[in-house]
Length: 254
Length: 282
Image (cartoon, rainbow over all chains, first blue to last red; front, top):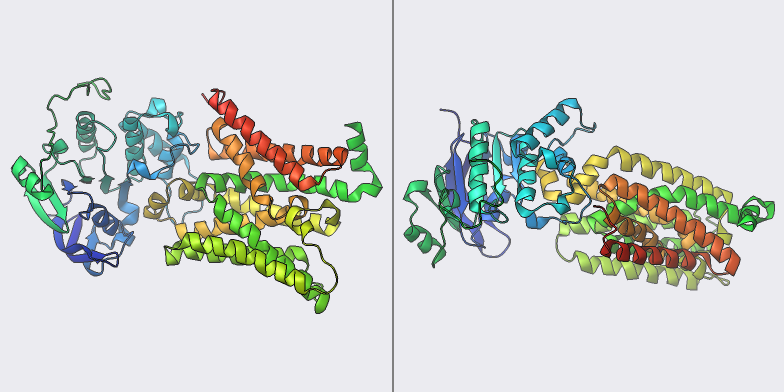
């Protein structure tokens, strides 16, 4: 058994006010695909920022791939939420994916090997034919795949995807995830989402984050547990279920 | 137009020729750094840096008149205060977090206030107008040499770190996760802005210089497919505005700075309309 991909031990964090995360302990095994869900403001984003080393915990210990998050960074692939960007930024798909090859402390321009990797990951998300296009001209789903490709370009051992369902329909997203799973069998994938059920038959476990964290096997996740977590009705979508209109933007053939 | 070229070569019109060469050199820096400024959306920070420059200019005028510090000429004073403002503003972003906008406003107006106080305290009459809005009669060969050196520094830095600066402008958080020292590159960008605004103070003045930094890049925006192309196109536009502005101001006897800026503004409007009509990038 290899060491866990992510370990949180008694981690608490606050932005100066009330605690956003309280005494969080969890372990994500290597090669596992997990989903972190929870209501807005429940601490999902904070959890992610802690795992990426963008924030430092007030107390507790975090290990990513057996190292501190800062040291683990070269081995981390990260896809942020799309809303964070200026969509009018003049940049092509390929140029964005090339950013995934950047590394701190490396001053040289990208080399031949870098370019090959960029082409390969573009192919993996089926965006190679669109590589010359402007990011601004893409659909939400295409942008998503560009950002996933950029994360993969780092050749990561662990992939953090923030709100991957925000702009695309669950059906296509599920297929993309399944394909990534097949291509990268050694990859640990952590999805962060406010939309629960979409990948429930793709992920191994679900972590519910609402100041504290509870773990559920993906198969156990019923409408009841989720409703309890959110304190209301939740629309859960199962991968593979028929979604009206989802076939029109089909990325991959069935 | 002939008259214009004659003027350029006229030995008695040295200042005019200097202004032209200065524009030629500075356009490259303005195109490159202006594109970063527009892409990163820090025009207001560039504004604060350029206005704070008056403090340094005022201090240099005051100390050279009263203390005989001739080494402290206005351009050196401007450069020092611009760098100081750049470091303060990057500290505000990186260390203090909130209240960044208040500090931008404070540096903007306190810089000007300090400068005007120095001017008031300087014995004899000194007119801050030349520094505020530019005066090509003040340009000497020494200025041209300095602009050349600064220009080379700016271009070398901006080109060497193109990928890092582009990543920081597009998605700072991702760049951080990739291990890029984003704080360093943000500070570097503000230092580049500080160098750049000082270049053309004598031509367009410190109040108007920000427009020349941002308007060409903003006008280029809808027509380019990369930051690189934005830099190239805004360099050309900047040179066009400066040359045409110089020519028009000479022909019509208008002040050069405002003429250049009005042209840049008109160019921006034309670009906006053209982009709306669908003449932008396909």
